[in-house]
View 1 (cartoon, rainbow, N blue to C red):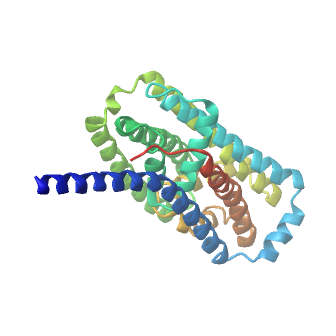
View 2: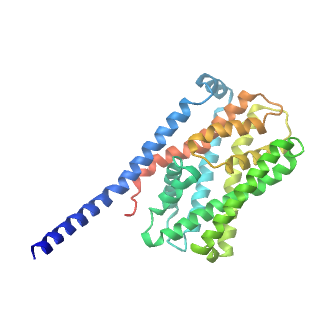
View 3: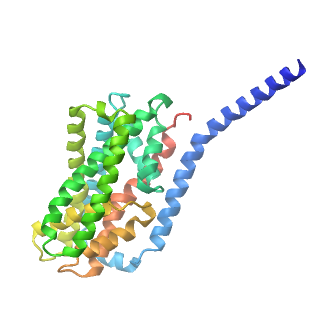
Length: 312
């Protein structure tokens, strides 16, 4: 009898402790995401090969409205991404557009500190009940898959034009792309069999791809603005070709986002090196990274305290 009472007391104590631990776990995840983002942003900025005086010099040469337009295009692309997320989860849980914006931006902050955008999968799942998380993870993958389909399709068109100029570099890029696409296809087959992706309607596929294309056009437009400001005499069609190829190259390289900007510098220098100096391209890549990556990440960090996560 005494042992039964003791075991019961121990069980209740353990249950109470676990319940309290779960209450502190969600805020702890928020704090870790915020601290991780700020830390990585600091190291990325201090390790950059571009001096602040160089950036300030080019910023003085850029019309003020151009920076505002780039930020507006970046924000619009994330509004489109938020609409896409709202459409993706509609049959699981109806959420308002404002709620979708918060989930998308805070998940971007979480993905900033993880490889292959794994943080986006985990963080978005925590906004929903436990029974729905498997379906939510499949919808996150579906959204990223459709974005990748658009990027690869337009990138391959650019690749066909680029192959005439740089055969060996294009060959390496093509091999890497084929390997990554094979991995994505195998992952898709696994999810289709285990996470019911085959149940996704054609209408949802069509809507998601259309919104992915629209988002691509918005965030890729920042390159057109920067390249116009550089005032190179290269034809517009060549720029469009290079932009599509640039996004293809940086999309198929799996990495932590802490290595994101150095890779973008290297890829942009390789693709855009015809007709312009290296320094303006590095500056342009940095400014686009600031508007397309840093800006939404900081917005996500700001929004983290305003949304409560579900219990694990």
